[in-house]
Length: 248
Image (cartoon, rainbow, N blue to C red; front, side, top):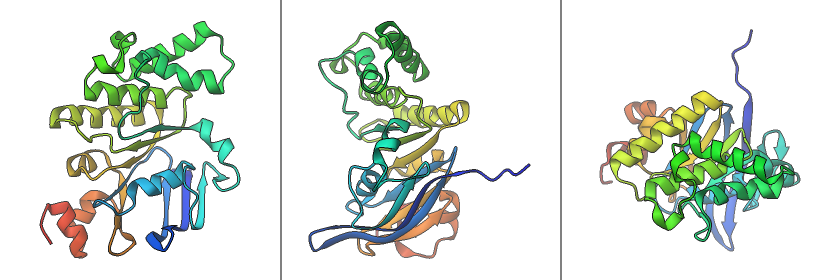
């Protein structure tokens, strides 16, 4: 029996320009199922812009993106119910409890009756360790709990793909390590694929199966592979400086 994993994302020669400014160009890569795939690089290199292309918020200036077998330029509506997204700030609705926040995508995309929606939402909060916080408001919880609640909402529709934008941003090292552990547990127990945008070196080394590195000066991709291999073997000065926390 073949152990080859299915390709769930394929980007081919993708570019993003805003007016005359090129953010990146000729970016190509694939993501395999059940992989933690990290998009990394310095500030302003286009990490979050690339993620927005992958989830259909930005249409590439050139190139093609395929997610779960669908062309995002033509079949975005077929993909959206099958992906979950956690934005950098968490983007929780402040006037809603955590339970109500998780129920939002269930209400939009399903015909489940209210009691079933509640059961599903409570189950997702339980998966991220927030079963006892369901009735709390975002203002009443810590930053780490807010990130977990946002992941629970991203899980609401049982998507095979989860996109996380800077999940460790603003967290202390212990809380960040706990979030890294949660990501790996969800990958292993639910068979999820994660696409994570981050520049947090500790998290990259802890969770990434494979990563790509973008660079603002190069306007594109300068490295691809397992992070440990890039740290040990890359001869690119930018890649070496990033993984060794050195000044160029």
